[in-house]
Length: 125
Length: 435
Image (cartoon, rainbow over all chains, first blue to last red; front, side):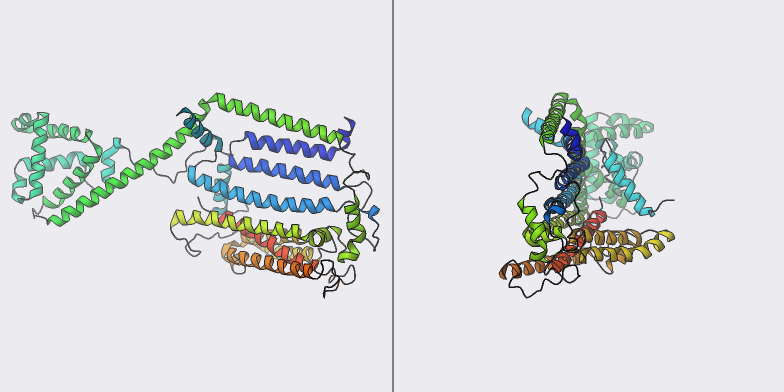
């Protein structure tokens, strides 16, 4: 339990992740769902960046030719966060474009209402 | 004071309404065609310009009293016969003939009856009758039958169109009803909500237990700090010549990963172009750049002066971040985002025409494709020469100088171009879309 509060970066990441997940599941507006997805993305970046940190070390820019690995933090999670950000931007743009098409088609952003009603109708028949 | 122009504010307001709306209403642009109830209005809309209730029946009455005989027209006889037939049906015939004062009243009733019947069939009939009498009565010249046929065709086409419009309106109304009626299904909705909350709580519990079992934040002995990252730090400078270890990782050791990212960005942009261009075509025919309404930019003079001064510096800063990617924090992705932000700012402040003088979405896609191909060519060369710089002609240079680290410098520029173009073209595509 004590460890839970020592890992406060990871704790914040988990809270953000669950908030984003609940927005994604409970909101009926497509734009708000996409915002929830972005909050989940952000929490993953925070988690990865936190995992790369090592207390008391420098950022991974080699200083004065000192290539001792014990001087610097882990550079790998930073590269992974970069990949994640790029993919998040791409999926967000794609999702927003699809939301616009949805709005053009149904004149509403309420995805649950339309989909659920259609499913219910099919179930009744 | 608002920084946005009139159109900008309107767009923003529209967007905010759209996002914040709890009840999603059909925008005002969708005009519902008239319902069968207000039938007379529909007639007026179609250009007959004829007061249906009064004039039409006056004409009809004139026909009965012998004006129609002057014309000696087939159609006139048709009308006459039809009228008589109806009179017989409704039994108003005697009444109307005996008492001239009540004639109009009788005809009105008769007219109402006729209207109450079939909308579709009557529609054609009404059009026909009106057009015919309007032209025939004052000069009493017989019209060629071709004209009538054309009139009938037009009337039929009008009726069809109206029918189609009404059907579409009914469909939209049904869709709205679907949405409005959904809260009446509380079982499914409530079940889904409860399931979603339970799911969220379960995920939170599992992840919190995991966090509690993780090694302490910032510990040196965490399993993530392994020989891979140590190798990157210890050998990175001699292998790649890059002072920035992260740049060495993403553009040398794991360059295929970055190539994949760039392809993902390019694909996303192309997909958005496809999705939103179809939109334009469907809405307003073939929309060329000149026909489209251009975003004018801000009218505020202070904004124009301030951003006119700062945008070049923002661009310069972005270029600095890109070309120093192997020496300092940053690189193609961060610098490219700054460049894209500067382009967005230019578009926002100075308007579309000004920005399209030096960059447009078409140019963006070309630059992105060129950047991707250059990236692939450079990496192919790198792989063919042994992937460790041993046989490469390009020297690694002295660590810390701007022309060092071999291929990382040009690769950063490629990535920066791709990212800047992606950011700007996504912004441009989304803002130029019109509902």
